[in-house]
Length: 55
Image 1 (cartoon, rainbow, N blue to C red):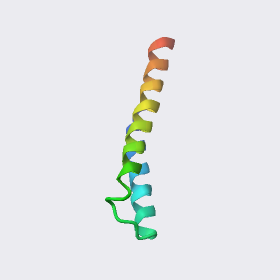
Image 2 (image 1 turned 45 degrees about the horizontal axis):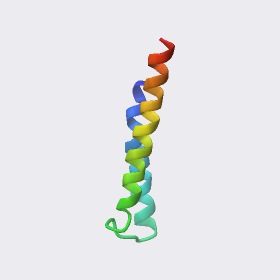
Image 3 (image 1 turned 180 degrees about the horizontal axis):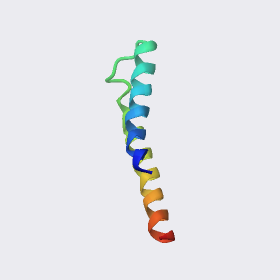
């Protein structure tokens, strides 16, 4: 669980590599970063809630 904070960084790195491979400007791909941050926050929040409820 402690390594879960790496999830957004790894997803953002993968997204950056994808954009670079297909030569898409970062300004066009910024919506993907918003999705990565939002999805990761929701997933981490869910896991924290489950840890709280099952503790």
